[in-house]
Image (cartoon, rainbow, N blue to C red; front, side, top):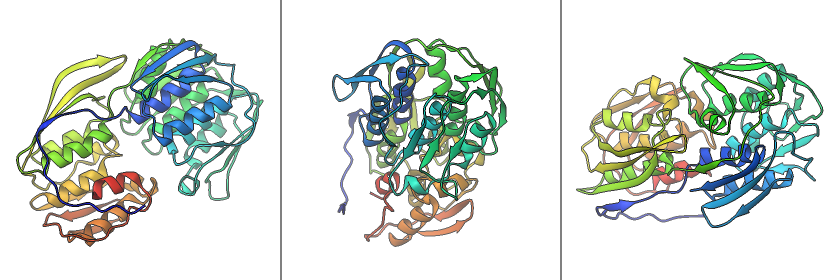
Length: 393
C-alpha cells in the first residue's frame, strides 16, 4: 500500500483509542487455559490479536466474538488444550510467537509456530534458552528464528532465570511455561518491563510474588475465568498525543487510556521535553490503572533521554523520534538496541525517514541524535512496520 499524507489542522475535542494490544493477547491466552468463562471487553480486533484468537481456537478453545470489542472465552482449563491440526500461523506478532512458545512448551502434544516474512526474521533464542533450561525442546532455524517446532510430552521444571535483556515477552514466556513446571519458577529482570501478565495471572487466582525486580510463582496452579475490561492502548494514544503537541493550539482529551506505570515512559519523556500532558480521572479497570489524558499544543525542547526510561517506552520511540525532530535543539537517544530487532530496524527506519523529510539524524549502534528542524515533503519507506508508518505520517 502507498499512502499520501497532507498537512491538516488538529481541532480540539475528546477521543478514544482502540484497546490495548498487549492485554488483548494475554486475555486470549490466559482465558483459554482458565477454568470457566472469561468475558473480555475493549478487545483489540486487529490482525495480531486475531491471529492469537485463531491459534487458540485451533488448540480447541471456543471463543465467541460478540461485537468488534467484546468476546467470550470458554476456558478449557490448564490441561485442556488439544493438538492443533497444523502449524499455528501468528502473522506479524512477536508477542504472540514468544508467549505462545511458553504456553505450549509444557503441553502433551507437538506444535509448530510460524509467521510472516517479518516475524520469521525476528530473534527467538531469547526465549528458547530459558525454556530449554526448563526442559523444553524447541527447534528453530539455524539463526534462532521461526518457525519454532515445540516437542510435547516433556515434564518442565521450575528455574530461576536472570534475564540478560529487559523484555516483557521473555518474562511472560517463562511465567506461562512455569504454569506447567514442577516447583517454583522465577525471573529477575534488569529493568522494569510491562507487568500485564503478572497482573492478569493474579486476577485469575494465580499467586504471583513480586520482590523488587524478581517475579516468582509455583507451577500447577489453576486459573479461574474472569471479567477482563481492556483499557485504551497508550501506544496508539501516543500518535494522538504527538499530533496534538505539534499542532498550533489544539487541546485533546483521550478517554479511558491504560496508564500502567510500566508503560508510561513516553509521557515522562515528552514531559521532559516540555509537553503539556496531564492525567485526569485516574481509576482501575480490572487490575489495570486507567486515566483520561489531556494534552495541549506545546513547544518542545530537545534533551538527553534517560536510558532508564527505555523499557517503559519501548514501542513509542518511533513517535518520540518525530517529537525530537520537531523540538528545538538536539535530542539524544541511547540504550535502544532492542529497536533494531522489532518489526523493522526502527532506529535505521526512522533515521532514514526523517532524513528524507529534511531532518538531520546521526545514528549510533544503540540510538541516535536527532537535530530539530523544519519538515519538508518527501517519499518515505515504512519498511512494513506499522509504528514507523504511523510516526512518519
